[in-house]
Image 1 (cartoon, protein in one colour):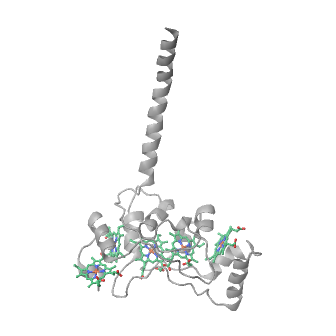
Image 2 (tube, protein in one colour):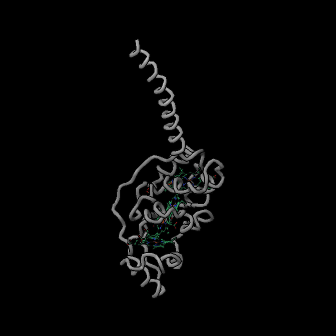
Image 3 (cartoon, protein in one colour):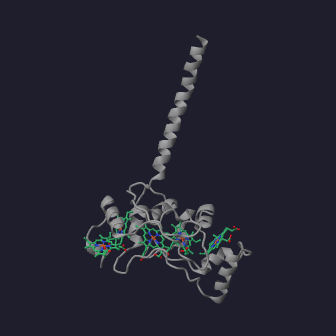
Length: 197
Ligand code: HEC
Ligand code: HEC
Ligand code: HEC
Ligand code: HEC
Ligand code: HEC
C-alpha cells in the first residue's frame, strides 16, 4: 500500500517535469529557425581557399560576438557585402594579440599600406545578378520577428555557419538550382532576367 502511494507520488512529480522539458525542447526548436523563412537545402564540399592570413571567424564572431555586419558593412545596402579595411582590424589589433605571428603579418601589411590580398571564397559567374541588399531586407530588416543580432542565421542560408569556422570556406552550392528552389519556397522572383541581366 505504501509502495503504491510512492509510485503515484513519483508520477505526480515526474509528469509536470516531463511536460516542462518537452515545452523547453519545442521552444528551443522554434528559436533555432529563422521565422518567416524556408531555409534552402543543399551542401557543397570543397577545398579551403588559401589566404595570406588565416582569418578566424570563430574567434571574432562566436567567442567575441562581433556582428557580421560590423565588418561586412555593405551587405545591408548594396550588391556586395564587402571585406573590411585593415584600419578596422587595427582598431583592435594595434593593442590586441600583437605578439601573435598572424597579427604581426597583418601589421606589416598595414605599415606597407597594402590590404592583405584576400582570395575569393564565393564567386558566382559574371552573367549572374546577385544582391545582398534584397535578401537581407526580406529576411532580416523587413522581418519583424527576427532581431538583427541573429543576422548570422540568415547569412548561414548561403554561407553556412561561418561563425564556427577557423577559416572561411564554401559549404553551400550557390548553383542555379539552389537559388531557384529557394525563390520558389519563399516567393522570390522566378523570371530568368531577374538573375540574368
Ligand atoms: C572582424 C571582422 C569580421 C567579422 C566580425 C566577420 N567577418 Fe567575414 N570576413 C572577414 C575577413 C577579413 C574576410 C576575408 C578573409 C577570408 O575570406 O577568410 C571575411 C570573409 C568572409 C566570407 C567569405 C568571402 C568570400 O570571399 O566569399 C564570408 C561568407 C563571411 N566573411 C561571412 C561572415 C559572416 C556570416 C559573419 C558573421 C557570422 C562574419 N563574416 C563576420 C572579416 C569579418
Ligand atoms: C573588436 C576587436 C577586433 C577587431 C575589429 C578585429 N579583431 Fe582580430 N581578434 C580580436 C580578439 C579579441 C582576438 C583574440 C586575441 C587572443 O586570442 O589573444 C583576435 C584574434 C585574431 C587573430 C588570431 C591571432 C592568433 O594567432 O591567435 C587574427 C589572425 C585576427 N584576429 C585577425 C583580424 C583581422 C584580419 C581583422 C580585421 C579584418 C581583425 N582581426 C579585427 C579582436 C578583434
Ligand atoms: C541569399 C544568399 C546569400 C545571403 C543570405 C548572404 N550571402 Fe553573401 N554571398 C552570396 C553570393 C551568391 C555571393 C557571391 C557573389 C558574387 O560572386 O558576386 C556572396 C558573397 C559574399 C562575400 C564576398 C564578396 C562580397 O560580396 O563582398 C561576403 C563577405 C559575404 N557574401 C558575406 C555575407 C554576410 C556577412 C551575409 C549576412 C549578413 C551574407 N553574405 C548573406 C549569397 C548570400
Ligand atoms: C534563402 C532563400 C534564397 C536564396 C538561397 C536565394 N534567394 Fe534570391 N531572393 C529570395 C527572395 C525571397 C527574394 C525576394 C525579396 C523581395 O523582393 O522581398 C529574392 C530576391 C532576389 C533578387 C532580386 C530581384 C529583384 O527584384 O530585383 C535577385 C537578383 C536574387 N534574389 C538572386 C538570387 C541568386 C542569384 C541566388 C543564388 C546565388 C539567390 N537569389 C538565392 C530568396 C533567396
Ligand atoms: C534565382 C536566380 C536564377 C534564376 C531565376 C535563373 N537562373 Fe540561370 N543561373 C543562376 C545561377 C546562380 C547560375 C550559375 C550556376 C553555376 O555557377 O553553377 C545560372 C546559370 C545559368 C546558365 C548557365 C549554364 C548552366 O546551367 O550552368 C544558363 C544557360 C541559365 N542559368 C539560364 C537560365 C534561364 C533560361 C532561366 C529562366 C528559366 C534562369 N536561368 C533563371 C541563377 C538563376
